[in-house]
Image (tube, rainbow, N blue to C red; front, side, top):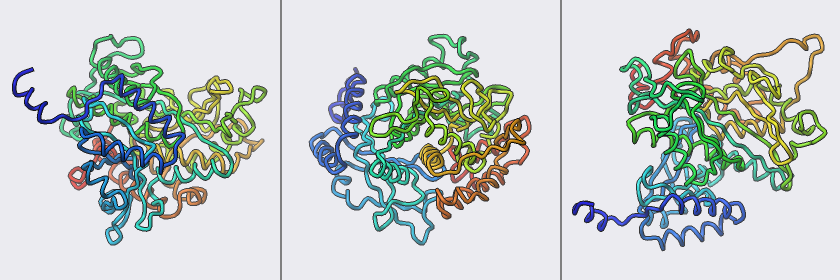
Length: 482
């Protein structure tokens, strides 16, 4: 270490925790968060922040209605002094408040703490997720993390029910930093690997990316299970453990954030566009889902069809019945409808199967602990909180599918373009019931605005418009350059 670097370290002694210790801290924090109240956790973590002098900032995260993650860094001392009055301008966030009633509040979810790898996020920081509140401190209706947390809390208190999920998130790594924003200038994406499941070598760029991202995820308490290249060249997937649905949605946002950070450090871009390149498999976010009651998995029945209980089959029936209504929630971008292509194992058929991967819902092999359903028609660019909220409410409150004996051989399919999905969404009374009129109108309006900037007919070529006006890609400059 040279003399200047030594002086810098001496001047800036910020918190940097080794990966092994990070994993231990994050798993302990997860366990603590599941057993202690918010008030107890607030006392513990505010005491910790006061004591730990090497923390310079606390990052608070929230998600807008379309699913984009927003992060605010608060000076540690300012945060501790302002916990009762953390406000921000909601009119600056797409899908939040209008300008004339712009002030919103943030309330820290103390059970969501993550200690961060300093080589990915920088030293001296920890992260929390926050709920968005109205001025009167009630949950803001278009913050679906708040809505999911509120709904699951009521379910647990009134019926003893807890929903669990784990999302299998696929993505692509492409060459160059900000490759999505510069798509029009470069004329397309450049793959960094020609390998697939069995052809990606141990030290190639894709493998090195997967190794680094998976190490960071493990350190953050994801409890990774398997990490591998996917079928398409330059495609990846990293699987991790089941969690209660709010934490499961948090994991989706952090997974994507870690992947983007790791790729950027190596001069690449991790993209979660569902179909960035035609002619090869797209990316999905298969969502494994189950419900427990008082600690027992009530989706399981050893004597039930495919090992599932009547309650699970009713849940499936309601999801299938409302499939057109909820399709826009699950596939919320112009590009996502390219993925619903039957030539590439696309889950576009509105049916359930234990074996057919073209089905919207699959039933994996399971036991009393692992019995679950797998919603395969979810795109990786969807809002995970909105997806899980919609799945849960649909499965519990929707109407079951009524079989028509005269049409039993007819298989329904999901919309093949966003315009038809928007129409189904807007005409659905059930969507109004579960999302509320205002959130429904906002979401549909944003999706329509993006749809209006692209041709309705997708064709065989990915259009610049479906990339640069994508809700996870676009910015003020790109959006206004139309």
